[in-house]
Image (cartoon, rainbow, N blue to C red; front, top):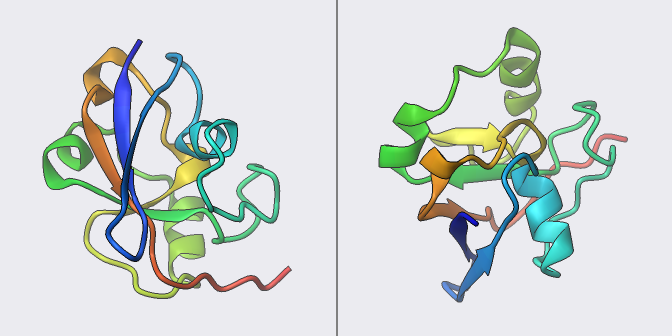
Length: 108
């Protein structure tokens, strides 16, 4: 089972085991990581904005145009930002570090 590390805004690191096929958002919810996901993962908001470590970001499929449009609404976007609902956990994401931004922009 792949492992990922969530990094809270205060720097606290929480390693979790995640079944393949789950989204980063679902992994956070399953492990009581503080991430909103106001649209419940249907890609209608930007409240599951996360920052992926560079090595794993490069290995992910490119974001869709819709995801990029929603990231434009997020606060603190970085070059490796993604929506947690759109990143699927695979064997290749084992060891991925996910940093949570300090704030979100809930326009729902």
